[in-house]
Amino acid sequence: MKLFDLHCDTLYECYENQKNLRNNDLMIDQSKVSEYNQYVQFFALFCGVDSQNPNALWKLNEEDRLDAFINEAKKQFRLNADWLVQCYNSEELDIALSKGKAAAFLSIEGAELITTQEHLQKAYDAGVRMITLSWNYNNRYAAGAMFDNDAGLTDEGKLLVDSLVKMNIIIDVSHLSEHGFWDVCTQTEAPFVASHSDSRSVHYHLRNLTDLQFSEIIRRGGLCGINLYSKFLSDKAESSFADALKHIEHFCSLGGQDCLALGCDFDGCDNLPKEIKSARDMQKFAEYMLKHNYPQSMVDALFYDNANKFIHRIL
Image (cartoon, rainbow, N blue to C red):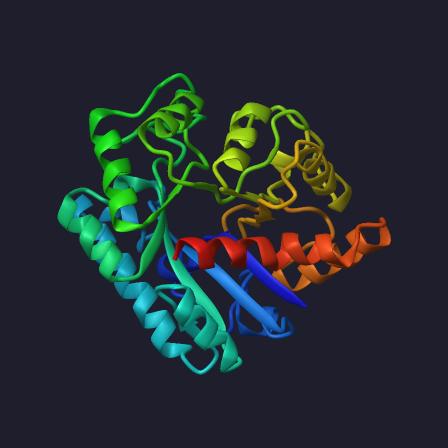
């Protein structure tokens, strides 16, 4: 089985809690993904929260946070080079997989990690190939849906969108306010992704996409990764595979079967469907879909093929 996941926060946990990608108590490490024939992961450099952790990224000066996180990513990739290879484009992805290695891409969750054009160039040179314009709060570029859903992109945000398009960095609209989403659409016709977002029609949550937003992602040939965070899947205290499947079914009913992928949010949330404890359990989700009469081709598309095609088209 193959797995292509558009979003996890595992590197953030490694940085703040001094863990290693090889072996840890997180949702992703070597053993938890070793059974996948091909495994591709976008690892997010998360903007961070104001935690009390002595290693908290937020304790650093704003200008130093990106350097610290890039150094952590490079260290982790170096220590795990025997099984995991960082990739900068689709050609390197193919080479890594042909050698039996897992493939890693870098993204940024929360553009506040980018404080200057020089920071943006540094991120690109380090391999960052996808950037969310906001996290849950307000920054110089945009606002998160949970902060102010009616706030649009700032002038700096519009310039950032232009820069991302020119540099061929994928724009990620997950977390972005609804107004900001449509500002992105006005600013560029480039395809973009919602790396870890669900359907607001299935479960009303401001972090989820409206049908109109999802239809726009379809129209421009973008990609949407299904988020497995229980609070985005349903209003129940404990979600299940059945809840995640409702979002997939609704998006498919809108004609989105070719732009659906996975953005599991591993290590970025503490409440997943009851059947999932780690990335290893995604195999159970595939089996669940097959038992509910989804064809193998649909499961393959969701779990790997759609994301793989998108990355080969864009990168």
